[in-house]
Image (cartoon, rainbow, N blue to C red; front, side, top):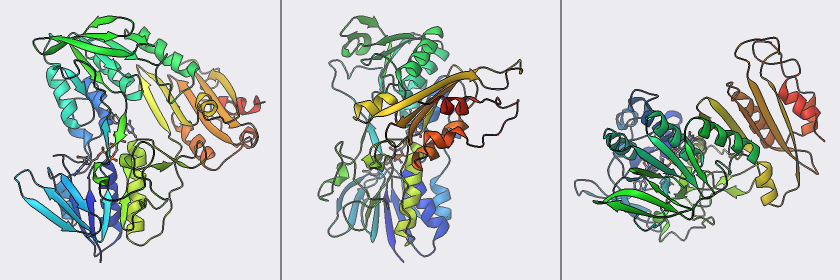
Length: 447
Ligand SMILES: Cc1cc2nc3c(=O)[nH]c(=O)nc-3n(C[C@H](O)[C@H](O)[C@H](O)COP(=O)(O)OP(=O)(O)OC[C@H]3O[C@@H](n4cnc5c(N)ncnc54)[C@H](O)[C@@H]3O)c2cc1C
């Protein structure tokens, strides 16, 4: 029997705790979380703000009571202040001032990530919002009840910023999307896909200011009223800053941990940190990224957090389980335009100095004789020039073709070559796809 202490009970912590409780008997599990809620699906934030769902109640999938029914002890609103890694004791303080000194045999750090908030002049004005927690979303929703909030600027055009821009526009606000990069979502897609999304945003009324860096904010009566970039200034009533996340690893202090370049806990394929008996999962830890070379990387996604929690839970309880790594698979759906990607984009490959080739194809999704609900889909497959192994893929369409990208995720993980894809048994039924489907056609037309 082990005493297992988990710090952080959101997606990664929840997956770890459930894996332990559901599969192994006789362990004592104690968890601490600084927040008052568990398992908030941040991905639903934009849908809530944009009134595409009726409220936030469905955005949680786990409760403290469910954990406790399975035998765990859960301390909510109880931040861990410090950890004595040599003595193996976790120190925390409850909301009511109760002090905890919890010894452990195994420790899981699942402390997640924090929004990156640069110190802009005027950055502390009211109505400059961050977006991470349920409470952040609630605050934005409450403020939007005020009709004086007419114009909202979203700073950062990564996938979260783009989703929020759609949400504010759907909520009836004039919406600006500002990013210093020349386009949106440049980390996940190649320029031709980013341009498709940028056009989609503009077509739906969002004012895109790409290639503009935020300089400072000005306000009146303590509230933000103006956003200044290096190219101009804009009247605003609210600003959402979402320019990325950094791993929350303040508890690393005193642990002499090996850390990644951005400060994330460097973990092995069992999710173990450089210290014995200390595991790290989710956004506070590195992942093995198969897109590049399988080495450590940082990709903050709930999907990765859950998988890392499962891996840690089994290893802690004595079942050796190695993570196969991830491809950073992701997707987005904005005003009906769906874009999915996995692995390396051509641009990212080139930035990393890797020699790649690519092949693209556009065709209608279903057999050409299907007259309705048969939009075009565009695919791009990126593959290594020397080995011809597929290293990434991107697909865009207003049709829901998202499942296809998971096949490419496996192809990248298993190093399938572009030539093997040419004769892959892809089924054909006119309701779903075409006899000469765009995946096969892209592969056949590869150099
Ligand atoms: C708006 C938005 C949309 C997103 N959309 C998607 C999506 O569509 N798909 C996807 O895969 N991912 C998405 N993500 C990313 C995803 O939410 C994160 O990757 C995920 O939350 C990481 O889970 P985690 O448990 O590792 O960390 P976190 O969710 O950051 O949770 C960390 C937990 O640790 C607790 N904690 C921290 N420090 C302490 C301490 N000292 N003591 C006690 N407790 C502590 C915190 O209170 C928190 O509960 C989105 C994120 C946001 C913000």
